[in-house]
Image 1 (cartoon, rainbow, N blue to C red):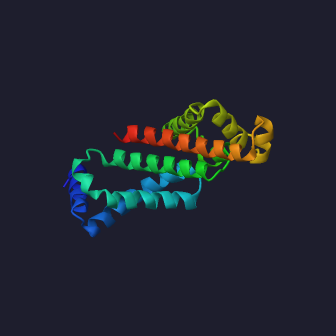
Image 2 (tube, helix red, strand yellow):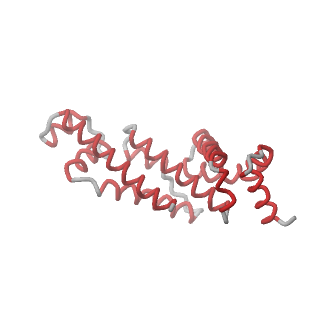
Image 3 (cartoon, rainbow, N blue to C red):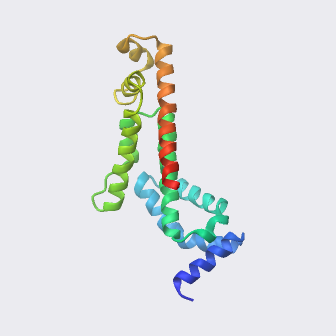
Length: 188
């Protein structure tokens, strides 16, 4: 049986809930998914976590396999979407953007595809920030890019500390909504 027919058969068996077929699929695609995850995250532990999450999603969505024309592309979209989720979670847990970019958005000139994807993700993050209302954007930039505390932001913007906290929370909600809407556009 040639490779495309073997893959279609394997995907069909996985769609039917065949755990042995899933194990074979896992073993076949794990190295590629892990390498892609490692390239994006630059951390073996985080890459392993992301790759495992990809295969959890594969199992959960196995019923869709009969309609998938290109499983490689399907896996790539899963990796990319889960990576965006990781960035969003990291952003929401108040890690400064400058630190996040150093850790999570590596630029590797040897891999044009990954470099393009990294630029696309970085551009998406900046678009999300630029779409914030002016006050929220200012508070967010002071917090994430300049590393100011709520007290320092309050002094800088001539607002209360509670207003600073409110602005930052609202900014994070706006950014999350922006990223979610872009992720849904990519899936559709």
